[in-house]
Length: 330
Image 1 (cartoon, rainbow, N blue to C red):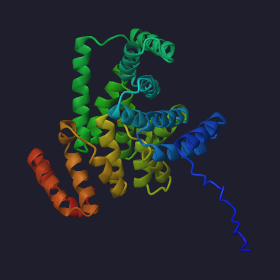
Image 2 (cartoon, rainbow, N blue to C red):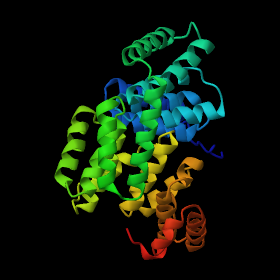
Image 3 (cartoon, helix red, strand yellow):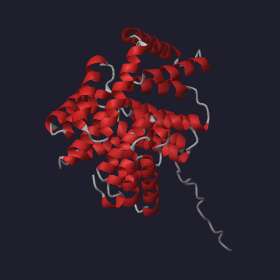
Image 4 (cartoon, one colour):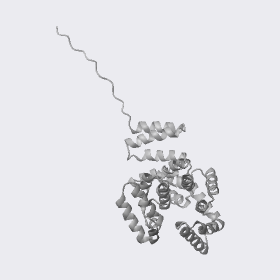
């Protein structure tokens, strides 16, 4: 008799994890406050299903929890650009509130309530709006003459700073700080002015003290990255790493990040950021054309550097006093 061949059936099913598996693991890690691990798992879920909004929203929540509000809002913006996931509006409002951008927070909180008045975050959104209203009442509104005075001071300080006339800028910045204390950016302008007029230690102390109270202050990280780099201190690198994880939505902040990357010779990072800067606000600055052209040249794009430089010369003839991006002259 012929023996029947007996073969064992292959009952082993290969385990191929999918997005929901990664997501579940990420949520478990998040609940245990193991944020680094949670980020890795949720990112794997996003890689598996990049168009699934829940995963990006969860990752934004983790970033919010660790204070990376700009990065959280970048994810929420991506979700809203590809569809409408209503909870994103409240999550964005919460992040803007943490960043001190209360008018943006108010806008997104109201959008959430308009679209989902009985939603899971409706009570939180209403409380946030109440908080902002109280803040507005406490600060009051500027009288028109105060607004005019502030604009004049800001424009004058900006003119001197843009022309590296730091000594001339200081009195105007000091007046803004004294008469308009709610204008927090003036403190960072003041630190820059001190640094470039030789009071480097005082400038660093201002920003270091600010970071102790506000560890996620973008402008402190920007100034310290620049100050430490120009002082030849390696500590600038930790601030560059932090800034590299921040993707703001405001053009002024985008421009400032790109410029600091350029000034610290991080040209690849600078080139990427400059490409995302848009609008006339950037083009009114000679420094935009100077540092963007230097960045393009150092990134292997000499033709683009030349185009930028020529456009900059037309808009800002004072650039003719400099040697161009190929000279890399600060």
